[in-house]
Amino acid sequence: MAYGKIKADAIIYDNGGSDVEKTIASLAAAAPTASPTFTGTPAAPTATAGTNTTQIATTAFVTSAVPTDSAIDARADARVTAAVGSSVQAFDADTTKNDVANTFTAAQTLNAGLTVDGPYKQVAEAVSALDIDLSTGNYFTKTISGNSTFTFSNPPSSGTVGSFVLELTHSSGTVTWPSSVKFPADTAPTLTTGKTHLFMFVTDDGGSRYRGASLVDYTN
Image (cartoon, rainbow, N blue to C red; front, side, top):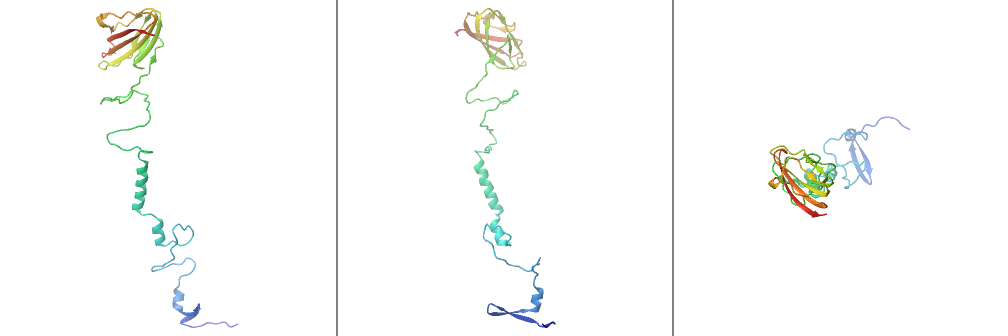
């Protein structure tokens, strides 16, 4: 075996039947196989769409795989459009909308008024004693079977109208109303035993005076 050096400007190798000449200078300038640094515009095969390997991704592959800003915007717009009316409430600058019933735990102040399109419901408040607490509702029920003296409490402040209805079932006894109650002709109606009666009261001066009216003698 011989050892030594060969001085040459180029070499020729057989490439499948064709001789290929490479200069020694071009071979020396070739990039190494480990961590090469390319210059110019290197090219590589473009992988098919959906390829997920360690293969080099060309700019052509990246362009086809990553959507453009306009495509992203179009997809986002389509999703938002599909959600509006189903999972997202449509915007209306003049109208608020809720498809479920709301329960408000505090009194609401509606300075512009209230328009109701549909049923208006009022819970019938059963009076446990003989005090009608106006802060709890506007329709009250009570059954009496003896002499009874009613009181009214917590009316709205003076200048604000408050009204309520009392559904009174009368088994026996007499009824005494607060001195602030004024019936027509200053005369309280006479109650018939065993009947149900409706009393309506209105005040606008903080409860200093209640205007009273009645519908009596309904059959139970």
